Amino acid sequence: MGVAFYINDVNDNINFVTLPFNRDPYTQANPPPGWQLPPSILTSLAALGIYLPRTAFTYLNLGPTRQKGVELSLDHRFSSALSAFANYSWQGKPTILDPDERHPTPFPAIELSLPPTNRFNVGGTYNDARYLGALTVNYTDKGFWTDVLNPVYHGFTNAFTLVNGSFGIKWNGGKITTSVKSNNIFNKTVQQHVFGDLLRRSVTGEVRFDF
Image (cartoon, rainbow, N blue to C red; front, side, top):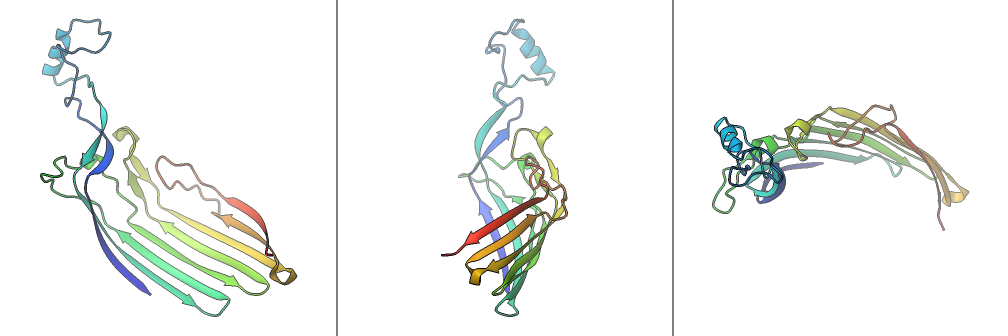
């Protein structure tokens, strides 16, 4: 049995962030390359709160954030062939800490990702002289992702449950093992990251020779 509580503080996180449009705009004295209109238009637009950013994105060392969570785990061996496990983790919403002299640029709230709050895994394995197999069930809560481009591309992934399993047979005194493994047995559409691929069922056959 295992129980863990953690607090992680991160400083100087190098992040690709969106800058406010008025942070480094083109001006009448420094119009965009190839600008065909009177440069004074840029001053008039700025008076209306409209800016053409010269630098829209950049890498910055951002100020401190704090993450905390709890992890619980249980493993048990019923026999030399059969074992099982279960674990659960809770991760709280990250907190933006106050900047200081060493870290003057605060972490922008709009750039803060929210990891899945709850994760749960349970499974078991069996392995004797003739047969082997495994079955696991994994649940992951929804998460919010912000680490690419601007807020138009930020978004949530749905919570999902994956069921994975395998079954195998040993031959010739254990020198040959044939097995079939499947991830996402029920063929659910799963996206683990808002910018990631859609995962479906995969099935793999394997033959292993021991010398």
